[in-house]
Amino acid sequence: MTALPLEGVRVVELGNYIAAPTAGRLLADFGAEVIKIERPRTGDELRNWRLYAGETSMLYRTVNRNKKSVVLDLRDPAGREAVLALVAQADIVLENFRPGTLEKWGLGPAELDAANPDVVVVRISAFGQTGPLAGRPGFAAVAEAMGGLRDLVGEPDRPPSRTGVSIGDSIAGLYAAFGAVMALFQRETRERPPLGRRTIDVALNEAVLSMMESLVPDHLAYGVERTRVGGRMEGIAPSNAYPCAGGDSVVIAGNGDGIYTRLMKTAGRPDLAEDPDLASNAGRWRRRDELDEAIGAWTASLPRAEVLARLEAAEVPAGPIYTAPDICADPQYRARDMIQYFEVDTGGEAPKRVGFTGVVPVLGDGTVPIRSLGPDLGEHTDEVLGGLR
Image 1 (cartoon, helix red, strand yellow):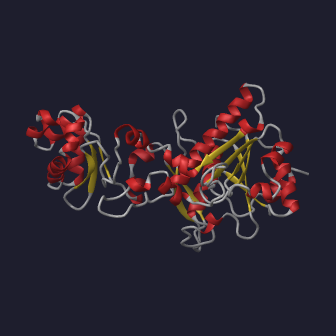
Image 2: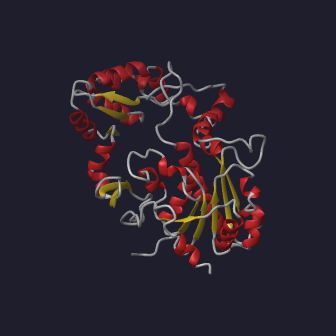
Image 3: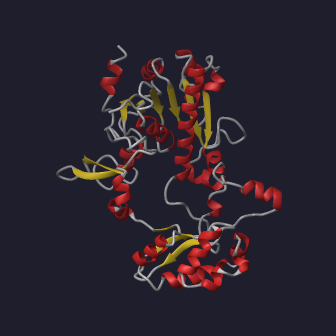
């Protein structure tokens, strides 16, 4: 197989849960050697999250794929010295402890820099390493709330909802991985940057805020305070989920001017297609309830497959609302190898064939194969620490 882009890069991951491990997964997916340091006995708490059977959750196996697990006690002097020895041979350190924790253990940026003056230090925390909230603990749920996302998710007459996954952690992990590679690029193309420029500070709430598009500018420029609009998107219409005959639903994005005209003609409403008041998005948003009612009446009269076939013929963006079984059966995902299968211990008498989401983005003609799933606790301790002797 062709060499992966990050082969030769070594990462020491001091992370738990999802944010820093997601950054580590992204780096590992593309060839970096990621050494995950886990506490003795229990390891990363993610091993027990959504654990339906067996000893290690599929969530852990997913987020920590392509990594090596080493057990060390960071509170113990011997563990500290072993970590610093690994850092001396590493390019990146990832961590997502509360600010001040690594410093308390003698593993802060100054100590890491002393061990390796080229190392990139990536720090993920709830609110960043500075500011009045820096020392406060927080998970993605809090970051999603304070970053502005939670207030926009759900129906307008109900309390805010979550998105169903730890999206704040995953976004922070993406920024952390990008920051790490950015710092490596700077290190390799210019003179060695000082420690401050090699320290990447990712705050969960800021990572979420950065995804909020024009939420703040719209408020400051126009006095607009956005509200929850359910399956719609503020100021964009028609774009929603619509029920079909038989109980299935589809998502239709008919908000482009030309697309809207084709959609309404397909739905048997040429009157709405040709209405000059609906020629632009602003007019369609004002009459969004009327449009959703018309589209919903049409979709409800037909099976989902027929709705999608007609919309495809009209070149209107639409798709089914998938469940996990739908994803596993989808030919598009299969063609791009986006579900990769492994024999996994799930707590039964024999291993079970389990599919895991593939590597994104695709490089060239195909996605990168997953080399290994999240490892057993301490699986690589002897291998890795033996190389330090």
